[in-house]
Length: 608
Ligand code: M6R
Image (tube, rainbow, N blue to C red; front, side, top):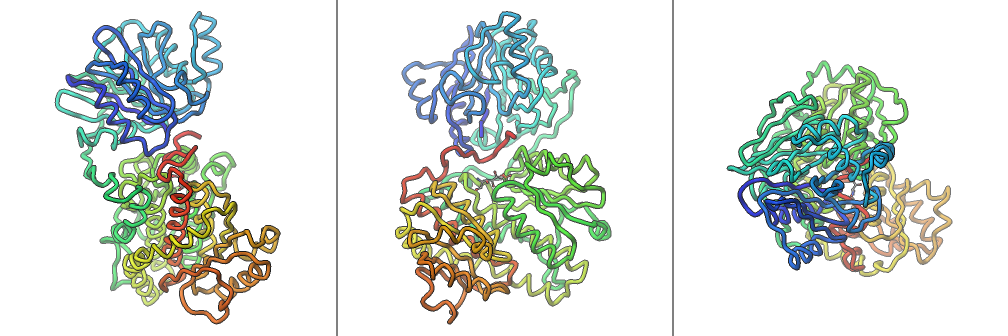
């Protein structure tokens, strides 16, 4: 999704801004631009497409100055072309704005501005902001931004500069992440810490409703009534090498191979072997409180929603508390039955997904306790939830989520263990689960050591047009996740189904051209899935099976087989998803896709 970087200080702003934009590339975008205060006025350079195009524009027509703002845009209003790229300007070219989010009342605001004589050049909602700030401007930029923002409905993370109030950046946030970076005689604004991490580790996260004023002499955070606010300075402790590729061809592959370590990180210090339970520091709830909930609602999007489905299965099996999983985008608009007896678990890698954040706020408003399972430390969901588990997967750069997914499943297993042991789960069963959890990093490594086997299967199927993924029980969500990974990065149509549902429709699709991936480890529903394998084979479908041991009933039935180690049922998705991630990855690479930044997708979807 869109990215913002801004700089004010004594150094040349342009290279710093371009460096910052490049570090945000992983988020997905389709155009980029900069606005530099050059001592006399504002100069902008913009380009459709990748940042390299913007660099080419800057090389042939350089621009220099000591402060400026920059943006990578992911189109929402208007095509991804140079005109619609940010920064957007006012009529006189004295005010430049970069914006993440959506101004929902832009049409009516624009009509009013047009009546007042403003001339618009782009199709963006952002340009409305530039003209509104122009209309309100009376010599002081923050006052004008405040006046404009009072009239705006929707979401924004913005950075604004003006040649009539120089060497100052005004930034504001509502519903779209923004932070300030603190340097020595220089300050930054960014939508994501990775943009400025090479320059500073001291950051201030802005909250919704905050407005920041940055000059090279210091910064202030104020509210929309211009009242000064106190905001904590945070120190970022992850380093840049963690977000570099580390010798792998793609971030996605690196992240797949990091999973033995990230799974370990998620469990570190949280397992109580002797008691057969877990210890969750961020819970902020007593055992008594934890036992008081009548029901649990888990809400999330995409891959995080798939881990939620696995969590539902675990929690219901071991705690006997009714659990519902809701797409966050649906939950927020459907008058959900949630009250102070509900525990609402919110799962998000980024902690910034707009729908998930809105769903969490909705649950909170209805009195539910909210609990975040989040990767990005300091993200909005992490800060606004009443407690939670950081999954500690480290920065996930590849747009297709991999290591965050396995860590989310581990976090859900830890929570299940905790509540389950407070209820009826015996210490023996608790210990059995802990034993299985502890074995996972080694087992994942074992699978990764055999990645070449998956690459061979990928070679065989790289030209397929369709794929079916089938699984049951804990591995129905794994099937959904395998299909999502494949379609996201290879653009092959893929569907995930509960294996037994196949006969209610998708079976019509099966012929010799249809690869069907069965996720069928030896678990409690194994025998049932075997029948479905036979049904596919009888119709000449190509069977690729993820299994966990020799099974006479499958002899002669499998075109390709990949063995995963044995574990307890509830943890089978953690092992079964690894070959599926690799299959998607290798097929995508063989088809020449842009694996880390697949078309049309964004890493963090911060618009509705
Ligand atoms: O950051 P989140 O976990 O909230 O993101 C949710 C989805 O946007 C995300 O999982 C998306 O589906 C990924 N591209 C999956 O690979």
